[in-house]
Length: 480
Image 1 (cartoon, rainbow, N blue to C red):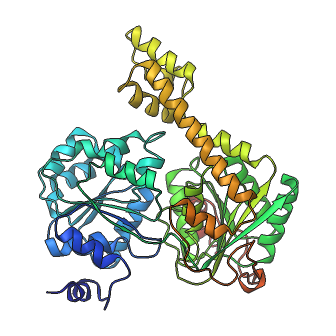
Image 2: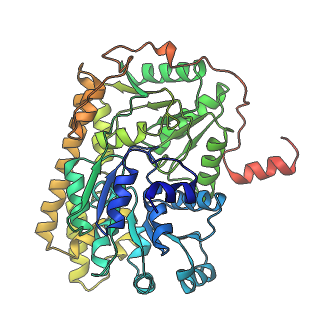
Image 3: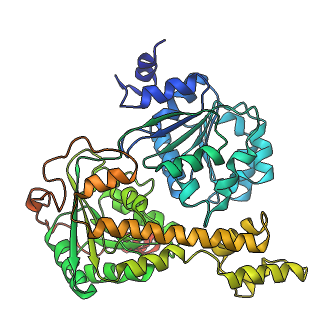
């Protein structure tokens, strides 16, 4: 049976989107594959269809609990009941039941941290897998080195006689691609690389003398224009401040960041997807795996720490293929904030020396966390590298990491300060060439904002609850 017939049989689609057939064909031939497909191009079909064709389980390594859960829920909505996420949402009994019946599942989602646990590896090695998928594979490079080192261990825990690996991402530079190939131990992978350009997204930019002017513009803009939209900030405090001011102005909005409880984050995300919220003010903790088709605006309150983050965040707009706009706000000194945030999770040389001191005294270095000398995130990174190399070499590694992060901030700053076409510069960053420019391309090519920004319709009260407990109370008191 031809692939188009199988596609029609299992998914009801008459034809493939660009890249899907090429990727699936290589996987069916047993070849490791890297697929760079923009958001909204149907990356998940690249592993779902082979799962049905092979009629064997597919293991999907995924970066976020919310992303895993969202994908499992979507599959179940479309009738696929044999999907499961092995994560911290499962209690001990649920986890044991899933592991005991793992062979019954078609699609198994797991985080890198869960994957490297010995009991999990043991169970997975008993399965005859069709495919191993690393979703959002750019995280190997962008997160693995400096705050989620278990990403770097994925290739080590896989069996020698493993099935083909599929690495999926929307954006990756050649350096990131090299990290993906290396740490997944891919064997002569086939690579399908689609253009990173999203012609339906227009790139705006606003430069201000002061942060106060920037805030004034932001509040005025959001109260005057229609969402849905996401405002990205670089700190939890700033996120809450902007959301609070917008609420006072009658905007249906909530803040979202890693400091909120997991249940609250999930609740806010669901409110946004269902349209109960017009705007989300968020750190970069929000967005990956959020399947909202009609996000019309992405606003960056300050410049991101690197171009890759910026592209991933603006890529959350216009997934329905309709026009959307991304506006980057800049005021002098924003780059200093970006530099600080870029390196805040990396350990200092004092912490490295202290780790060595604990080890020499035969004290578990993990005690540094309880003693208040280091955060859990920073310790996880330090512990990984100190387990591989002597102290002086680890110091050198982190100096290089910090310099690389500062270089990334400078690359982003060059795009912000340049008067060249923003779209061209973004595409060039990923080693590609822009073939065509849409009309109203970017701030420097010229944008008629009125064509893309509808005036705000005041249809929602700004009283959307920010926690599931508040929503439950609202329902019980009959205040809907």
